[in-house]
Image 1 (cartoon, helix red, strand yellow):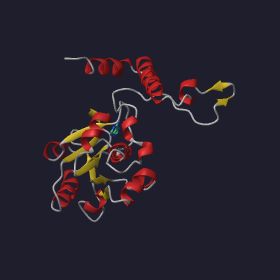
Image 2 (tube, protein in one colour; image 1 turned 180 degrees about the horizontal axis):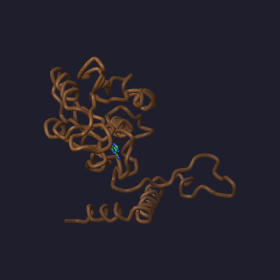
Image 3 (spheres, protein in one colour; image 1 turned 120 degrees about the horizontal axis):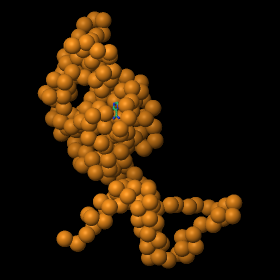
Image 4 (cartoon, helix red, strand yellow; image 1 turned 135 degrees about the vertical axis):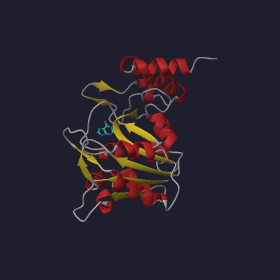
Length: 233
Ligand code: ADE
């Protein structure tokens, strides 16, 4: 899979995309991530990429031409399955959306900045608008990093068996159960006996019950959805 990220702040993506699991996925050839600096597509030699908004109001707006040029440049090389725009007024990102996008070949993520981008770019190019939550970030770069991370870890082969994505929270609509490691007792708190029993059937049942209890208590919205989805039809 290839992800092209268009941004005015490439430096903000350096940390998240060049370490740990994403770096490993790139090294192993499972993912290619290319960061484009929008300034390279600036309108003039002053590096202009934004302007005041028509009608007045605080905040600069990213202009059509540089973004259009950057996207057209990418599209001249290959076809893209999605052009995603990161924005607080997009659909809320979740595991389902990550699962769906992990099946795509090539995607562009366009990071918003300042007051946003000219609406016409959204009309002309953007196929999907994504928010990572109901709060406002300075720009869309951190959102792009989060989206990329949650997609790339799902690509076959990226995670080893021991860290399989199948047992993640949300993957079956439930939060993950608690986990423990050595020592078996810490500050008088004991690891539940069942986990030391060696009885894998009982351990599985315990984990499922814990996952359900956790989800019911912490995320009743998810719990109700999980129950409805698992009703016999
Ligand atoms: N840009 C600013 N805030 C954002 C958010 N919550 N999600 C995605 N992109 C954003």
